[in-house]
Length: 186
Image (cartoon, rainbow, N blue to C red; front, side, top):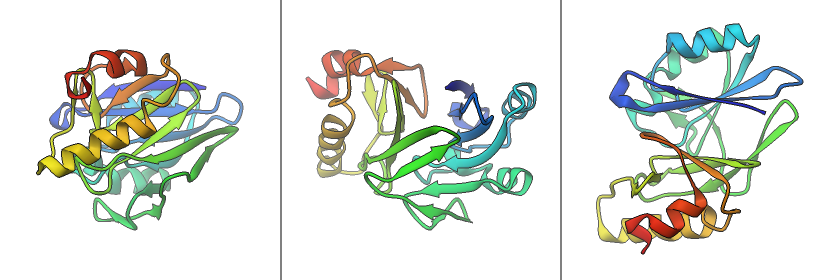
């Protein structure tokens, strides 16, 4: 499995490429912009971008979606049929998204947004803005904050402690670090 992170110019958001080494198929996680570094990586690694996964419908994660679809003809997966003014294949908790011989599992992580979803591959989780290193994504109410924390505990912290967590902003972390030291879960 190939995993590469990219820091985008739009709101310092992260985007990620996950690719199958055998088939060279690639999935882009979040599409804040059509980014030259992402395009160069795909080209240099001889990868075909066939799918895009959107963790939540905020502009810094969807702003480049139309350009990416037009360029790569990639299929978009999101919690809603319409995301970033584009049509998407609707996915929900427990659904699987194949990328070559790899399979990612969708889990719900709402709170920051009602449509928040995360994607789990062996050893790595892409959590969007639900969870950050040392923090969580902002919520509009205390009830939504509790909902977000409950879903993270149930769907993310139940994974093995060594699993890497890749958020929509900031550095990566692990299940072990965040479940033990993130102040929102103490």
